[in-house]
Image: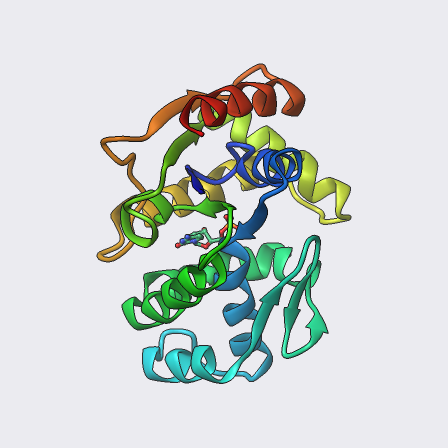
Amino acid sequence: MVVTIDGPAGAGKSSAARELARRLGFRFLDTGSMYRAVTLAAVERGIDLADSDALVEVAEQVEISLDEDRVLLDGRDVTRAIRTLEITSATKFAADCPRVRARLVDQQRRVAEGMDVVTEGRDQATVVFPDAECKIFLTASEEVRAERRYLDLVGRGEHVTREEVLDKQRVRDNGDCTRAVGKLYKADDAIEFTTDGLTREEVVDHLMKIVEKRR
Ligand code: C5P
């Protein structure tokens, strides 16, 4: 069974999807971390992110593996390094590049082959797994999403203001919703669910009910 969870940044997708996968005993696939890992590799190699040929080359050379809690880039643990403000903003270049997307989409399908998965991202229901048995579109208001992200960043020791986080979120939302390939939108057959005012436990309880109905 494939459960897709798509939605904008800060809707609480990652933590809810991870916990949902744990409760179901399914594999969890955080596809955003793959775009982030390609970006980190490109930044570390000093390549011009706007040079799509160079970016595709990096995407083809690196090995990204995702285990339960960690993201490995060529065997190195980059779980924290891919979540800085710098990498978050720079990830738009990899996400906007159709050839990088094609490569990562292939990899995502291979990971899911023959497995029960909860997969989370922007294009999981629309592009990667159009035949998924259960599709969820998770959203939250702009303010709630920005506040979550702000608290998350401060918790990681980043020095940011709420305004900065909201500004960057708007830029990211705009990029996610307008890119030529793999843009964020709700699949016709996805169930939309707003997480404003709910705890992670409440969100996961609700998601479990949605999944159970389709099992
Ligand atoms: O979900 P997360 O914030 O970690 O994703 C990082 C970036 O990767 C997002 O801003 C989005 O633009 C991009 N992304 C994507 N397609 C996905 C997952 C993430 O374009 N399936």
